Length: 200
Image (cartoon, rainbow, N blue to C red):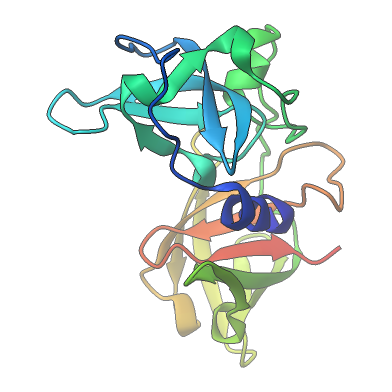
């Protein structure tokens, strides 16, 4: 997760109109989108006709923090992509292409979760958001105060009770089983957008 957010800060950039641009877009279209001057293989995940940039694009192999809206003229055909699909292992769009299903964890892995936020294009540590899952549905906040959380394995949704995160909603993702350092289990808070990786 940490690498992917940094990639977003480095790569994210507005594409420019070009003669090879598309005439339109629809959900599920595979296209090439320009990020930082590189044409990434991407897919259209939403279309909003009322927006000046109606095509919501997801670069394949990245987390959804990279999703960006474009005008059709700013996109190219999928074959114009200049780099391969990125290696994030739990991208549901890539897994769909391969006929695979994402791993769905039954519980939130215990351990210390270190939190970060993208602020002004920079990744900053958010120590006050750090917490530790101590087993079952129990956690402690950064001061060691105990609390609980609900977890829905079907959706990955979490709801915290007590301590510093009381009332906060979040989502849990574990890209692979067993987890890896390159793509660690992650909790993302819905309201603040803080992203917290399991320390491995």
